[in-house]
Image 1 (cartoon, rainbow, N blue to C red):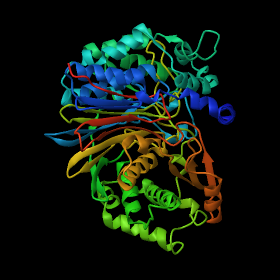
Image 2 (image 1 turned 180 degrees about the vertical axis):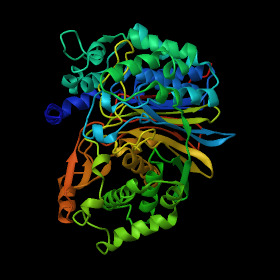
Image 3 (image 1 turned 90 degrees about the vertical axis):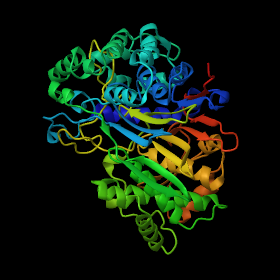
Image 4 (image 1 turned 45 degrees about the vertical axis):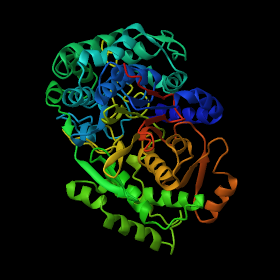
Length: 552
């Protein structure tokens, strides 16, 4: 614990000292950030993942084929953020079948005891049953059109033949280098022989991971949950004090998600119920709609965003059943929350009046962003918005020797108290926005607790300010902290010292800053209603790209 605290402090100190360097790390040429086509577009967090998806579209595949190809590729090329040892949430739209969802959240093993691991921050005792493999393969079986082997081929190729490590991925792996040394498998795969971190530009080959992916592509998910891969996982985890069992792996299922629905200024919003936070995202938007805001005054907009998201976050711990889903996404509840917000100070409450014990729960706060998101639309209008994660940077920090992938961090208090055989909610929230019952925007985000707030920022920018998708993604964002308002500074635009003084005089504690990725990373697609083309856009704060399909 002490070593981790020191490491965390050193990491954030380095972030502060190297802010300008991280700006450079996450720069992708602007032309790669935006794409448009009537044949399909992809926006994903890594150029190779985006390209893997495009290959599927150009081979005649649909949006699900493309999304699964991108997701498996991210497991290889961006392991610090997500992978096959993690969890996922997927929202799907088909022109003939409407909206569907897949819940592939990690699940606590049957014999897990929370009291035995409370406070454990990484390692074998934080490992739960992975869900990504089942979620992706189930999605492909139900909605895809191409064989699993073809869809997984790009990921297998990058693992087997190698790829160049991007600066951002190298930076993230180095940031937790000392912790990675504690586990032999992780050391083997993610460190050099002299225990130093891999550098940007290094050619990375992952033969063991290639073998695992190839086995899945040939034999399906059963080899992962019942076969030799499952046996290797259980043997390693159990020998090192973890809770994973063959029975828990064999019994794992990707579940069909309950779809939650709401609206924002006449636009329909659909998202996923628990364990995703779609209801909270919808609630925040609906509260925002009820607050009196002068949209010509950006400070008022910022205060409204702050309080709408903060008020919705108060309900995170109260989500339990479908009655709660209906309540929190209702207009009447949004009006109630908005009125409470207004009454606390006559107009809009100030930052000093928040009841700390009811504010953002400690277990729901994230020190830094993580996770990976991708969005795909194909030429027929099928949409897939997919978020996958292993938790904090490099997840549990554990990789089993011989397998080559990291497990997600799930237990130990990271996501709160976990009961055996249950799945714990997280901020993941892929969303589809509708106009006249037809999809207009599909998006999602990475970034821990900033996932819902970043989505609210972007949707408001598009609907309230009529911003193009790219401008909405590039605009500085606002996020509620327990201790005050967090304002993003981008290239000196929008928020400045005068704004800080303004909010301080109203009683807010103000935090202004510029650290790439800190305010969420959005990957989205949007319909150009004039041309009928789809536009894809990748978040400016990451190395992701958007590409269009050239139909063959």
